[in-house]
Length: 197
Image (cartoon, rainbow, N blue to C red; front, side):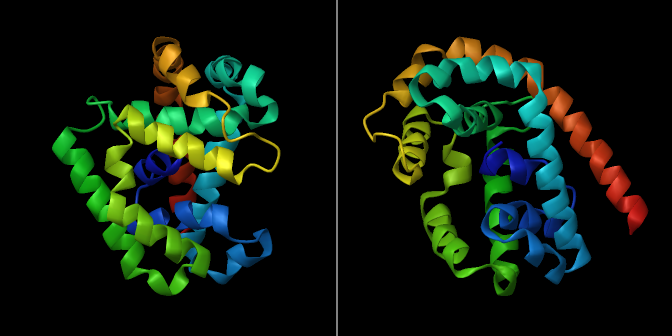
């Protein structure tokens, strides 16, 4: 899952910090953070493991794998954020706006824990309100282009966004089959984490 989904699948403010840190730290550094931030890191990993194994995600990857092969999962993650952002059964539009503002506030309140490369990204994320704006197709296009830019062996002109738009109905069905299961899984992981505290 991508940034919006990870931030949504949290149960405390500090878990939000951990969810974002996971992609920016070395494994051995995770234990240097307070326990509630470590819980967010653990939750992020559990979400990724569950996502990678889910049958609906395997189906969704088929949209992108002919174009980007092993990178298909990264593009599915971005696509899923579009459906999360537009899922009004999870939150209203005002609720999503409030959620995005809360995430930026929490991250800034925990600025001391953020590595420099994440601080730079956070500034851009907040300025463009990425989390809320994932609800727009064109912004998913920007995110997919960003993945292409970062990938070592992918051409920037691969039409992944076009594949997303063309297969949006199919990908939505994959999301519908998948996300409720993920939500329940995240709640279960959080319950285990709270028992440890």
